[in-house]
Image (cartoon, rainbow, N blue to C red; front, side, top):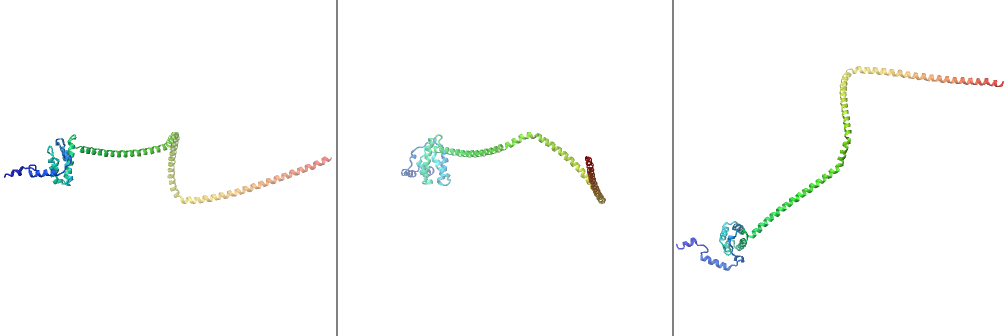
Length: 294
């Protein structure tokens, strides 16, 4: 029963066998010089440090082990933890990575107690780098957007210039048409009047044509009903015209004959008259010659 109290509340530090073994390990192991510097945990932002510890332990173990993480947290809750002891205690879990982990941890603690807010300068620098990286990414994105906008503006400007060139090329024609339109107003009006007159005339002619066609339609009905009589009458008219042509031809021939006869008589009469005159002239000459002899 006397040993019952020992198993109830004895810690590793209270066990002489464990403490002697730990002292031997401490004397036989070589530790980095950073472990000689004491840490005031009141100046350290433990929340930030614990976040790093959990991530780093999981990374070294390759799995998530909350037991080891909580065990490591517990050793830092002292006012002035010993890094050498922490390394020895975690060696059973992290093996050769124990010293690597504790050295990284101790450097962060040294930086944290000397920094404003208890945050390691490495974390501050890392946060700055992340902010700068985010800023650079944003600036790069903005630069791409700006470049795209500039390209779009350049394209729009080129389109505008082309449109302006087209307008300038077509402007003389437009101006010519505009100037000519004032001059052609009277002509257009006159042409419109002529067109209106022609339209009225065409309408009148259409109306007359319609009446005529209607009359012709009626006449066609009447003409069809008298087709036989018309044919007979046409034959009779043809015979009459033929007789008239024959009579006219005969009359023309008679007139020509009479004219020729009259002309021949006139010529004969003229000849006879000339002969009579010639005889009279000869007689007059014969009478005149004896008189001269006497």
